[in-house]
Image (cartoon, rainbow, N blue to C red; front, top):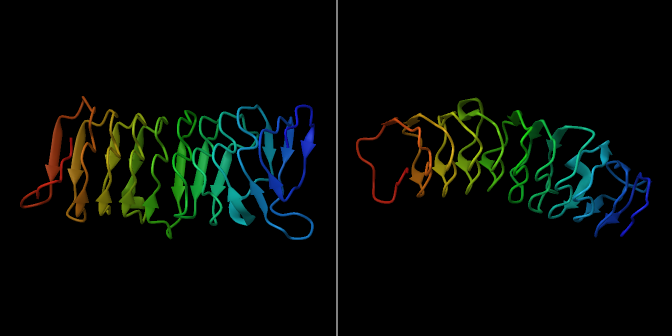
Length: 220
């Protein structure tokens, strides 16, 4: 669609391009059971998105809802459909439940209203750039089964505290440019890339539960 005056969409098998609809009601599937495929259709628009569930969408592409105002601010991410990047970038989403490891880059990048993130016990990875530029304030990995934090996953997320317990791998600049003042690296961590806490100018204390740190485990 390249629809400028469309008032509502209730179902479709494929939506791509720019669709400037005012009210979007996306059901999980079409009347014949065909999963819906969404490209970057609803980016850059203030829309009312209702009835959204990712479990029966077979593809949600880059920037699908980026820069839009969502009616439902609680989102559940499930299934294998969230392959595109920046899907909800810079939207007003407030609460997120994540039930899949298969997520594209920067899904909630720049979402300043995001206050609550819940990970299902089956999820072991925070996707690359997932919460970059958000306003989360804190994150506790000890309440999750997360083992790997992706590249720039929490970069500039305004974190003042982070509990790394249970993590095994932390990738490049995962927590760069936050406001963390104290860190504890547990023995569970066996891989650290560079620049993890680059730009955390308030960092005053680091405790490492290792006898030695091997070459390449740069933490700042």
